[in-house]
Length: 294
Image (cartoon, rainbow, N blue to C red):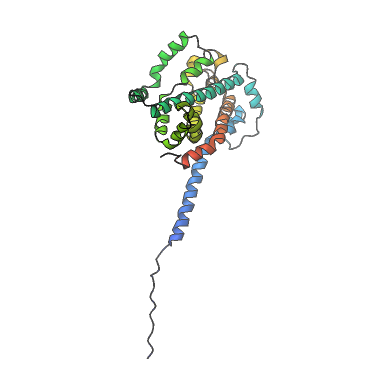
């Protein structure tokens, strides 16, 4: 008598397989990322679209996705406007942002390294005092800062725009916290070769901390470039206007020069895009790696 063999095996799952669910999840993630990218790019497209449009296209009741024709003359009209020295404002913003960023990184990094490495019994007290300054609203310091700048004769000058921005307690705090985790072995190897604190800082610490410097430089540069209130207070003459102050003059109580305003906004965004493209490699490196910390 033949005995029927009964095959045994793992029961098959009912419904979608794990691989199918994984593919569906991947597709949903890509769709979500695509939506986020579109939402992020829409404001930039609207700025560029209106910057290359006529005033009639911008204010037309029947708004269209694309202008009737590209108004490239808006660029020359912006820089030929005698009431707003746009070229000078761009130059001032570049000088303020570059020198302000470089000076702030220089001073804050040395202060942070000194607080993290140089043995001094009052180092913690100095650090806590720096942290305490972060609790003071920036608006509270505007009047005292203006009085000091005015007494030094720096009103309507680049010195008045740059020097007060060189000192940042927040940047010093970030550098100090970062340097606390920097490997001491690298520094000790340099000290064996006879290097002091200053030599170790410039030859060992700075070259191995470029991603952190780049990230903080990008944040500082954007903040200096977009600064409005302090340049508005100090820049009482059109020769000392920054790009943000110059753009505000397109909006008056009587009228809004809207197409020049959008073109000025597009021009002001371009340096920030270039800065990000230049520092992108360091920014990604700083995010994907934890550095060379202990």
